[in-house]
Image (cartoon, rainbow, N blue to C red):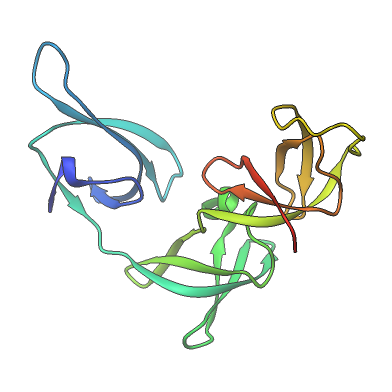
Amino acid sequence: MAKVNEVRRGNMVLLDGDLYIVTDTSHVKPGKGPAYVQMKIKNFKLGTTTSKRFGSNDNIETAFVARRKCEYLYPEADGYVFMDMENYDQFTIPGDILDDSMKFLKHNSEIQVIVYDELPIGVEPPSSVVLEVTETSPGEKGDSVTNVFKEAVLETGLKTKVPMFINQGEHVRVDTDSGAFQERVKV
């Protein structure tokens, strides 16, 4: 158990017997009435996101999860195959759990897999990844303004906006929370 105002984004909580990940939390102190914590949580079984309001002094049950260093191997029809880097066991995580995270992962990438009750339930991508631009309109001489963007498709299939001076074949760093371009990277 933990105080609800100590729970942060990325923590796992148990509500009504279901496992949730906290996707956003904010402490609200209205002009009238008591303070409260507004929390957005995502259900692991259903994949649905809901908003819950808790009193600032309420307690919430936190779930103990482990993180294992794994390697992403390849996609399968029903999910994605990973290998545990400690014991070399291979396992599949269903695609409906991971679809959003997988647009940032290349084959053979190292990743932290989140395990709850010996069951892999998700991945924790790094804060940013470097990916190659596979499709975009060509840059022209003079396209050095950084606040003008164009559509680009990256090697994992992720679509994002990049500055006009980025060309196909170049590598870019992308934020895994928003999918937004951060910088050009020399590889």
